[in-house]
Amino acid sequence: QVQLVESGGGLVQPGGSLRLSCAASGSIFSIIAMGWYRQAPGKQRDLVAHITSGGTTHYADSVKGRFTISRDNAKNTVYLQMNSLKPEDTAVYYCNADIIRGGTYRYLEVWGQGTLVTVSS
Image (cartoon, rainbow, N blue to C red; front, side, top):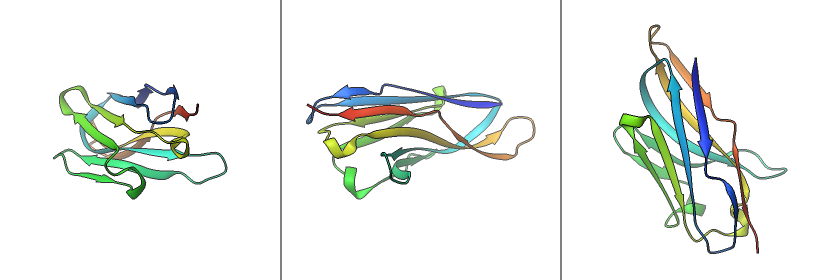
């Protein structure tokens, strides 16, 4: 079984910063890519940022220049540094990973439980 555990959410004032972390654990042969999605109340879940095992990144236009995704392959962990936060960044942030399972070598998509980020004064 493979698990993603997120941390780092919370309440922050507009213009502030937060850093989210997501650690993958379990029977993992390799992690192809990891990413962060977010879902605001009443809205669909959208991609925020994505990073491949080789370090190629992709960002939603709304967060470019403010958010940075990074990855520690040795720790199977992905980070999302969020700066210059705005009220419209308020959402539940979900970690996602594309994984090759250990043993079976089958592809598996895994989601974390979500962490709430609230940007408000």
